Image (cartoon, rainbow, N blue to C red; front, side, top):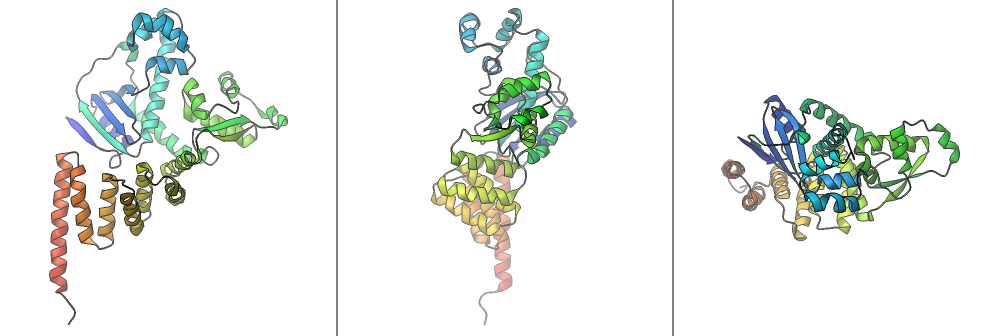
Length: 369
């Protein structure tokens, strides 16, 4: 049995809950609007593994400082090629990591990846029920309920952190006030993280080594509050900064701030589909239906043609009482639909709106005498 649809209509936390409750086994394929692709493996409702496109085992090990790229190419690649299972066995055999250390390392990355997937607001998912084969080194049993609880908590807490840390691309550095250092009381691992705060590494850079972006952001947030660390800036240009800030406001449900940020961003980057999607949904969430029509037209004039925009544009026309334009937009949307179920829904909606228009025409009865 396959379950599929857009993430905007069924968020991943709710979907994970459904798969857990029904004790499903199979692979959940996720394709986000940010071109991120992931396969999440479920067994009896529990997550047992996740594979993110581009996150190969050698790359994870290199970024975490477990091996160097040169070591991998000279000692492992020539011997094994790109087989994650064999690479893992070789890492353990060479005493680079024990089996227990390797599994802890991998489980932390799996959980962190799931939490990032929970933040997605756009994209498409498809769950295909069935069996699969995984090596025991790559098979875990992570309770989905625990992932959901922790993921939900992190989403809520990011709202607080975003006041000082708008995104993971900011660059923290040690403040110029040496007296503040007396306030530091860190555990050994936290000292390791602290040593990477050098005015060059982003929070994302540090997380790639230590594996938990959220916990690292929390630690740095505390140091910023104490005046030990300051935010140097962002490695990205101003346009990317603005979009990242808007994403954090959007994820936190701060739609007015999202709109304000994206209005300025779209003046500089008028062809960005993701920005149009966010601002249109923010207008929808704040009942600004005239603005949905206005920005949908702006997108169209810039050559941005997107089914998400068309759906909300049609709904906005309907809410404003322009049934004809609502129907026209639904008709233009039809060619973009991906499943028979979506096509059937749109066909029924078009027929219902046409009937509604006819009934109103009959009721109004023409011109005033």
